[in-house]
Structure formats: C-alpha cells, structure tokens
Length: 83
Image 1 (cartoon, rainbow, N blue to C red):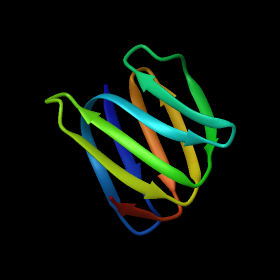
Image 2: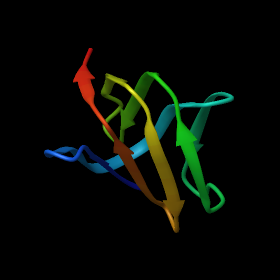
Image 3: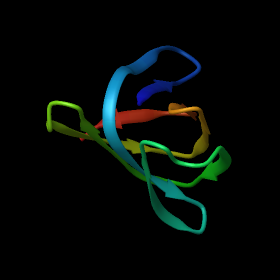
Image 4: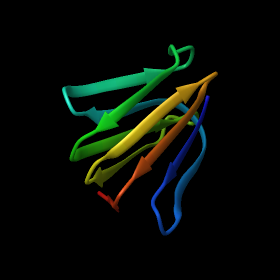
C-alpha cells in the first residue's frame, strides 16, 4: 500500500507503508492494506505511519482529509509538524 501526505506547500511523505493511523473527526482510525474505499475529514491530532520496514514516524496535523482508493492512501492537510 502506498501513502502520500501533502500540504499546500509541499509533499511531506511518499512511500510504501504497512499502516497509517489518522485522527478522524469522530476519533482515530487505522488504515491497513485492503481497506475499503473512503473519503473522510480529519481533525487536529497525530498521524502515525508504520512503514513496510517496521519503522514508525509521527506527525501532528491541524486537520484535512484522507482518501483511500485501491491501496493508495492520500492525506491532504493544512499544516504538519514531525513529532
């Protein structure tokens, strides 16, 4: 599965992942390979990425949207800061 994280200014992340946990407006949820197609609003919180290698990274986001389509995950956020 591939993840891309974008802000209006730059591409923050682009690469293969095992999972990503996002702060939905109704609570956190995790996206794994084979996840159903979805578009969801994101709230302020932490975006947690687990790469294929097992490495993990976290980012604080201020809100945005996530789209999942055929194991392609796109996260569009207003601002992001690596934790």
